[in-house]
Amino acid sequence: MAGASFFALFDDIALILDDVAAMTKVAAKKTAGVLGDDLAVNAEQVSGVKANRELPVVWAVAKGSFFNKALLVPAAILISIFANWLIVPLLIMGGLFLSFEGAEKIIEMMTHKTNKAEKHEALVSALNEPEVDIVQFEKDKIKGAIRTDFVLSAEIIIIALGTVANKTLMDQVLVLSVIAIVMTTGVYGLVALIVRMDDVGLAWQSLKPSNLFNKLRNKIGSGLLMFAPRLMQSLSWIGLVAMFLVGGGMLTHNMAWLHHISDFVLGFLPVGSSVTHTIVSVLLDGSYGIIAGLLVAGLLHLLAHILPAKTKA
Image (cartoon, rainbow, N blue to C red; front, side, top):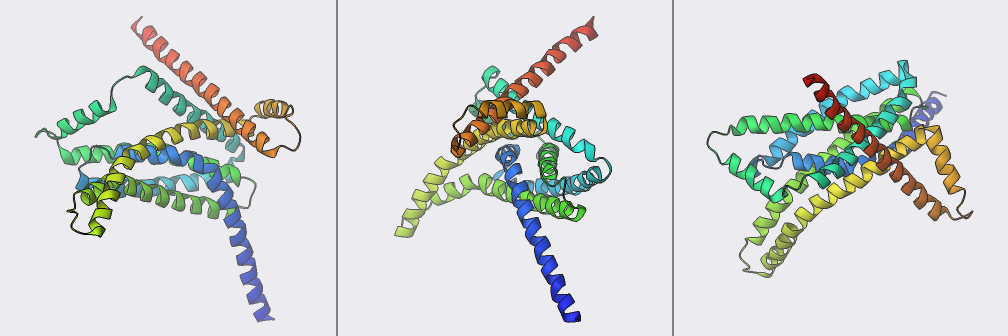
């Protein structure tokens, strides 16, 4: 009897873990859209740091990210327990914020013509100045990256919480904890690979082609040097698209009237065409994200112009 109870306990644990794995997979899919922006932003944050200090800086930011999530996960659980009604407004705010971030990037691309290469050269020349405090420069970089990470981590935790809002407290704790650990490890592991990719490429390209193996590494090194900047650029664009898709999706799923508009539009599509429905649904979410982001950005820019004028008056 005791043995049967013991094995029954193992069976219950296995079922719980299976449920948590399934819910974590759903939550990961929902939050994956934020990762393109997360990767691009964090990789850009360590730009300008000396090559031999890139990995220590990434590790310092990763530790800050773990600390951020150590604060955010309990906060999310407390909201779920004591203020469950806050989850939907927070998801809407998260959707608006993501859409606003995307709109700001578009506005910046349209209004700021400064060449990125010129910015990079200015940064390098500034770092070569003897009066520049490199230690303080690194600390400022790390603090800025951790602040940015806090916002992105909050978005990830809010989205994940929304997927398990109706589950048990234990399920919520396990899913949010797994998401926090996996996302942080994955993001900063990839950031470390991205920031060192060009250094590896340069080292391999510089090898003397004394044998077939070195010739092969020369070619791979040249490929890495060409691929690294394109990867960064691709991540920025993927992140931008993801902001509107994820932000718009969060608005659609938490604002009934937007959901009704989508249902109305999808009602005109032929029945049984699931692929077409999915594509149109995604495009609608992206459209809502773009419109919402531009509206919020426009309103904030208008307020920024009005308030200083009133202060001067």
